[in-house]
Length: 313
Length: 227
Image (tube, rainbow over all chains, first blue to last red):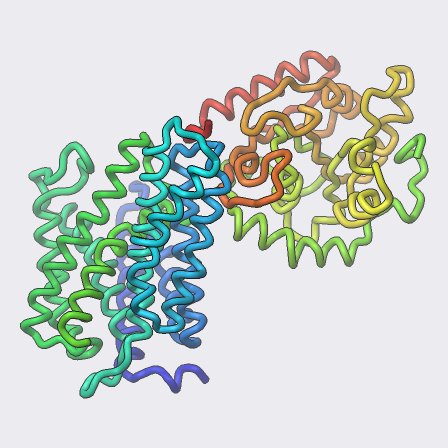
């Protein structure tokens, strides 16, 4: 069984996720029973989708490194596809977009090979230079800058940034930290996703002052600060279980992830507002598209990765 | 092949086991995972035939996408109507089109007086309770632009007034695999399913109602620029 290979700390954390989901389902059930006149369909759909996402993620993390990397590569693929589907693109660039997709298996292959040097420069240097070359060979100059810039932005967020989460998986265990890379990835995912939920819940509970009225009118200062506080508490609590971080480190990482995740969320909101859309897709019932779910992770993953890299490796 | 559908020889009918395997192993992963469909108003899709799905046509993927809307076990009853002159133009393509995709070949531009033989295959399929897939635009036009609808759909609908016609607007497949391109580039594809039309006695009124429903679906749609 693959479960034997998992560090007990990982199993505890995964158990914690499902315990939390159980609570969420119970609360949703009670709310539905108490307010039969209220339409709680979206909340129910959201919780149900969380169950599915948590289950898929748990299986993907448990079976083995190859499966985990393939899973994250697939998430990058879905996110890039969704991005390219909602933005304006040029007909002439079909073949260019094909190459944009090709970067995904390559980027994740560097991770499989634990080839840090190429992993870190492949998209920002080689893809950055190659994508415009492919466009130049087609020769369409009308809208060139907008086209090349949007492809780069898509690759940087959906492939480069997200792949940092996958690179955490291949980080070797340290002395006194046996759980290793998978635990770091789990720590990042738990904090980022719960930060989203906490900001939403705190915003509903005590949010008044709008923090980014033009970008996302639903976001409030109360929600942001409440979310960051919750994330920080959780960061300190989970650090000894899943990371080599001391409580001092965790006290810094918590707010860092809280604020950065907020801006990741906001950047996708800005894109949706720019395009006049409510969500980026309908892949995940109650949540929207896959970009709506991984937006904050695209910001927190590189930030957390480089913090850990700098501090321990 | 003068009167396709009139008497179906055995080698013209779908090979169900190979067809199911082909759709399970190749078509569904391609259409549902690599491309990805956003289906709106799926409830309007009839679970049982007879029915006619009438969609706009931008890509060879259109047929595969519409066929993937049904559970695999319904596949034997789902038949795309396709141009005989194109899909039966050589032996290999004819074998693949008829035995694997399971097309009902239709002779385009046939003599008006010869309607009975032209529509014989379609009539028989609808009487069997099959779901037919029809592209009233004729061939795949300019990607992602609605072309004029041909009235063959209206004729078939009037011959079968109790059979519902389901208008379907497809978007995105023409970006993924347009006419004349061999490289597939994935984009999420939108499938807008309209409300069923039926009970027509007049071909023009049927086409009018169909066009109106397609326009309504297009208004709901929110497509990014692709020029």
